[in-house]
Amino acid sequence: MKTIAIPDELNSDTSLSINLFDYRSLKELSKQQVVLHKNTFSFLREGTKEVFFDDSSLSIDSTEFLLMKSGHCIMTEKLSEVNSNYNSVLLFFGNESVLKFIRKFELHKSELTNYQSVYSFQYDPFIKRFVHSLLDILKLSKTTQKHILEVKFEELMLYLLEMRGTDFIYSLINNNDNQTRKFIQTVEHNQFNKLSLKELAFLCNMSVSSFKREFKKHYAESPIKWFQDKRLGYACRLLKDEHKRPSDIYLEVGYENLSSFVQAYKSKYGITPKQHHKA
Image 1: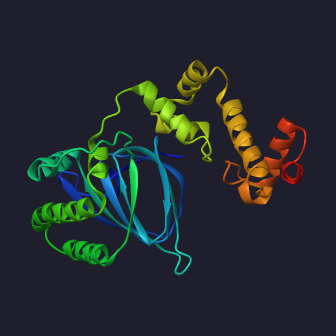
Image 2: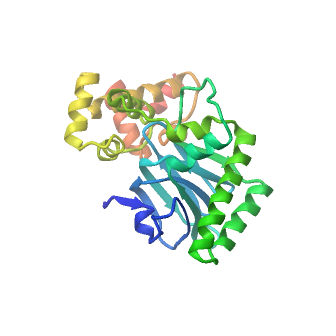
């Protein structure tokens, strides 16, 4: 699958420091490899969205919206079950806008060091009105849009700052230059997610062959075996300790269907998940 770059491929005016785009589609995306060249608010209005980053992943419906840090991600977009549409209002902005905001309002970091690449927020009456106002701005000239969007960006950030503190703001400009830490973080965070080696390598900005070599260096075994052992070990705990049924957990532990999960489980433990569940 072709990797897409956003906002570049949306015919958005990337010369502006803050860009706005009303994205609509009648086609679903499944695990699309995306390079976000700017930080992005995705105000989901119709459909559902799932994103995977190196250090975090989220799935939302139209009761929520996302803030995504620039970088590599895997994205799935599904149409609304009501009218078979997908609609998200996208607000793009660079780190220079974030730094300008921090300086202007003299913000200070909290003690948090576990920064994330994606955050979700619930819609409330204020945000709903805010999104409607963005759609009205799209009807104006580019020059007017430029000036108003700079003010609207501050309005949004100040509101979310009041609700959630500074952590999400500093996450946007946190640079993880330690490649080893980034690699291990990607592997550990996504061990139960249904991502292929190609997709994991993309999140690490590596080729598949480089990813395999790096994996062997850190974990002393192949990624396929390591991921399978982790997922089946987790499944075993859910079956025995939490008494969950195989049909309830196969997706949670990273398998696409129940039959492949049962086959892998029996191959490792010598009995079926159902037999373990009853033990």
